[in-house]
Image (tube, rainbow over all chains, first blue to last red; front, side, top):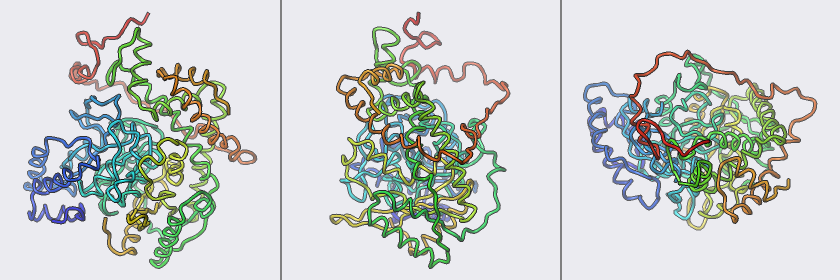
Length: 477
Length: 96
């Protein structure tokens, strides 16, 4: 069995035909996970794989299986699984054991998924390289001197190495799409509100969204279909009837050329992007230039709203009810020390930044202004979608960078999110799909293309994504 | 955008985060640089165009305060996570 290239669809067919058992499949995946331990993709391999496999096999044997039954999946360390540690790769939650299942966990469990383990990430999902993890950096399977991207870098690396058939991540400003691009896999950031945030460790609540990593667009669709749906426990979750839209096959792709070319984008990325667009033209799509000036402000809006929400969300971590506790001389000192020692440097930086933009005297100039520009950006994207069906950009301005290259320069690190953050700000869905490689010193570094659709336009993303895969001819990781 | 060491100390105090002397200087530099970058937002899209409400389309989502779960079924799980407990309560230092 060629596990590394095995898709969820293929594995499902093997399981149903009884050509392989759930346990055999899970054990083969686990073997790869053990062999690729040096990547530091998994923080923990769960000890109950056999018990999970037994339940899933029973579902198959009794004819109650779904597409996801018996499929070994990796879970990002900020998604709660009852009874399992969920640390968000932070010292603060190093020993925190989840007291309930996240909505997505419940959905996957009901479908009979095998949770292989929890994967490394940037601390509290703050970063684009997994370098801010308290548990050390994850290495890119395509070049171990480079980062896998982030924040869901462990999920992307585990999948790319063959140590899972799919993975879950969360995306606040690109944390699924950017690592998917760096590791040569598919990553989907669904429409805000289409997948419940209940049971995700919150970072920036108006931007956070959980979504799948997969080897193919079809697999991403299978996982998405399993985890989506209305949840009364998340007040921003959309009712199911809202998300059902008449599907129209996309035909026109808009490219915000000025935005794509304006910044310091690697020429190899631009060349690959142009080639991808040519392939789409050959597949019958019309490619049209569009103007989206507010996209250029995306990063500024993001680095105001996100830290503001971070500073508020992470206020709950005070060393009193759960998490790291350091004893001080009084209660205030307990707080100061627990938070000072429990949070890593990037988290402390963002909390202070958020505290600043929300403080009286600066609130209007930063937070208020960013909220207003967010509305402009949303409206302009809506308007752009009156003329085109899909918007395309590269996923990232460069291929995967070296470990340590940007870790002391936060602003440079933030610029890696330039193409992905406007999507979260607008709340629309987007997918990153492998589009080729950039060669560097003998390594083939994966590149990705990002397709963006209007709200609830996941079907359009899957349609255009499958056409793109077909045009590129076969998929190999 | 000048940020002084005093500002960093003030912010750290508001955020309840103990920060070392060395880190204060690093934070001062980083915050200045990041704020200088995001300050371009002040000029973005102003003038002429009417913007949607500044806070967007936010509204409160309410539900009935009903269907309580059976009392005490989560107590043990939750208290197991607390750094210090006294019976069925979380224990903290004196507040007043």
